[in-house]
Image (cartoon, rainbow, N blue to C red; front, side, top):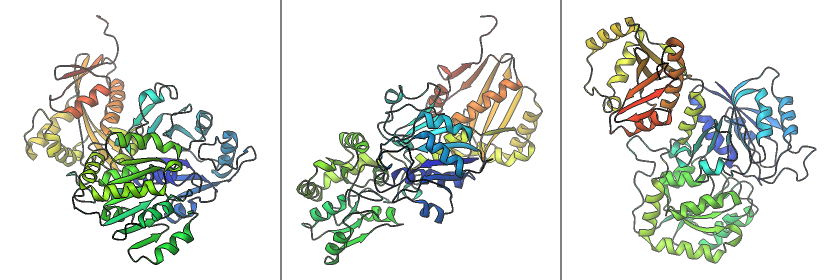
Length: 510
């Protein structure tokens, strides 16, 4: 699978769009997907960093002749024709992609429609819900992502991924399968010893300097300032920190997750780092440095996940200092913030988004005897047996007998679903007249990421082609298997007790 990502970074736009796309790109690359980036050559662009990490990049002009504002405003509309023309100039003539992903507030349905000359499927990453989209998939990982918010802006057949469940945070923030995280445990110490300050990849507004002045009253605290490469107060930050041995200032770090894990308190912006902090349960004082951060920051504050002081223009050094004093003195409040935020994010959001993209190109094939070990291990996995009607382990000899009988049965289809990086799951259909029973299970490493929906959709296409006489599909789900219940409901199955049915077409006798 080939993917092109269109996103920009600059001192004014910030690094968040490219950073979250880079997180997704890394997950896709681990799944044998080829990913390229197309970015404008704006002041503060990240093209060198992308190239250093081995990504193919396409460089677009910083400014188009049709622009009137130099293209630096994060919300400024780009002349979409000029952007498409620039892409035409840099992309190889025969280059085609399976997906184009656009993460840009300045591009809308016009650009997305024109971009289909290079890809049959387009995805958009957004958190504004303020302009029309012509895409197959739309992601809003923030609380702004709701069906009601995007109803005027997307087609009814557009698939949507909404909320922190899809927050795309880096692997180092991911929890382990038992629910732990890099912090190992939520903060419980009686004292705040170490603080981390960061206001994004650039901090062009200079909020780090305000935080430094506020923290000057807390000489007992160790503080790490990650100040951003475009910080206008860089010289002042360095000078003030030079006389304080407990303070460390750096423009960029490759070990941000470790600094977060060591910190007892975070002071920063309301962008994508919000979800990294949540995954680690790190108590936070939040200040919105851009208008698009305010709604999300307010919602997180309303559910008790952090202390929100407001937009940067309204936050003084004294307000910041008072907030620090309150949290330093209140272990219970810090603990409450940690627990409420930690429940929101499990660190698997990027993998869920990747699965939604790859699921459109999932391949199904008939199982063979060569799949015996794969099927045996998959069916006997504890996570699969726990939700199966027959929960006992299956012996190898019995399995081989069952597989031979199954493959010889023309009333049964046994299918293996495969993505670019290997098998994903197993589907079985048993024909009975004009109906068929369906069952499925996912293989190890594929649980909880949304693959089941792709399996059902692709399986339905396959089985209708094989058995055109089908009028309905049935599925039996145990009453405590909520994940499967939700899966079949979302796939259009209608529930009756523990049995689900999906009508494929009207029955002639009805």
